[in-house]
Image (cartoon, rainbow, N blue to C red; front, top):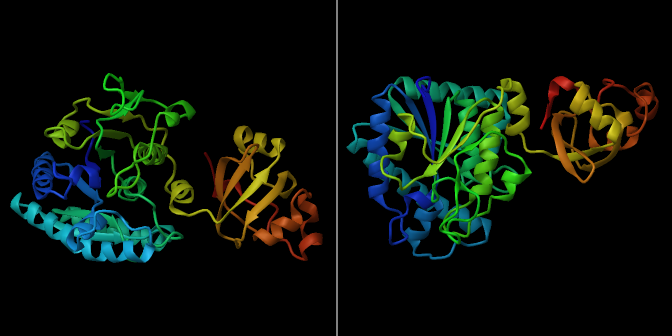
Length: 367
């Protein structure tokens, strides 16, 4: 922890709720106080905060989150200013200045926008300002939304070159069994690899005001870990939890990071939304997973979706298990024509040949 210079702190809606189930300003005040203490240790803090829709629901008097996207967007529009006013007042009370950054997936899949975002975050932190990031729920729809702020926080950790991702949750870590149903369940203190056994322990949320649950936290930890950033899931209501984590106290569950991917590889793996899928045979699977090869048309057995050259797709093998993601050199219709053929036959099939590889190894991430 002595090497931690920048941390992304994800604050979920559930940890902003008071005992009455409403957004609680005292919680924001407490987080601001802790962030000030962390900054006094020369550690930069980037906050990713949920809560806009919940604030909107309270403002207009709704108890149940609507299913219609337009109504959710409207509630986010109402609630975002309420949420930011609460944070501005809380941070000002702690002697800090806050800023707002609202994003959609369109902002992160563009390299130039990512660079602008990174420069803005760096400049704000250099000015002593705490950036508060949230998904732009007012404009987001299914095709461009992150889905939850756990995954957004992992992406911000990568873009912002953070050393640690801290996910504040309504549970104090990952348990072997649901602690709400089994009070004596044991907590898993360290996870070295997120495999199928670990994923089976996760469960979603049933809250009317929050999104995600432990499943989304595992997804976020996996994404951050692929970029070499460890993740700690802790209880947001634990006293002085942020300060204690930065001080090195081993609370909650630590997800160990893997060897760091390059920025380009992380961008391919996580910044894009996949536009389709390519199914491959066992020989191609072996070539990709164990020999570091590119994907050639001869190993392709199927293609799903409608995508153009230059878009991101998932590569599946066997029972639709995703083993890789990559940027395609051919459209879905062209791949449908050349699947199962040798590279030398591409031009004969299509009338042109861009390259021998459907996905070049440099533009592929094996998952």
